Image (cartoon, one colour):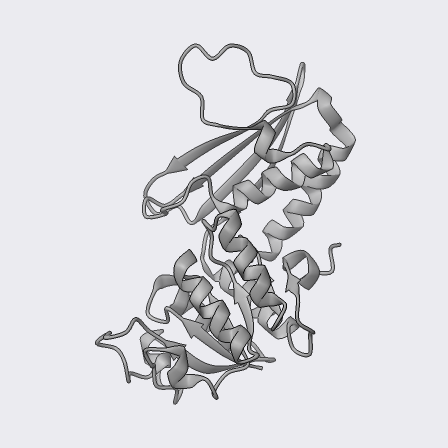
Length: 266
């Protein structure tokens, strides 16, 4: 599989190029930068600090449409939708790790996935996706007797809150408990709010420094508390998961998939 990376000069883009270079079952097909970037034409390997790889960075998907089979996208919601539409039109697979999409944008992504295969997940980490499986199991066993609180922390530059991963955790727990997250979620608390309700799922957000990503889900009742925690110390964990998803897409039919499919956790 020939993989294209968009946003190749960013922190995530460089990690993705490195992860592709280190993988045995995929190759780097293209590296895309922002239009007008001073790095257009530079070797993608040198951008990532690997030395020359023989792939010159370009400024649009149209410039490399014949050079890749699957695109990995960790950009912004609006740009991701444009890239997904391009991949659908040209029958290219796509891995989407972009967060902060609203319901309408997710629906648009799903439409694109009906024309070409897509893996869409708010977190590509293998460990985190195993954590989601553990959360579903815990919620099913513990039931409504345990209060659920989700605490997440990320670096100061993250623009969406709560994180897409925290929201996915909430969705998994709510589904296991037979609840609708849109109805039971509580985002932050302040003032004289009274006692928590039995079925609410609380979210607390921390933004500080260079935290890559930390998530903790509390199941608490009288006399005990269970915490299921995932901490990422490097963006490489997300990059490796995305590359694994890209490789998994080879030969897949059109449709929307997630990391639970990739890891055979369903």
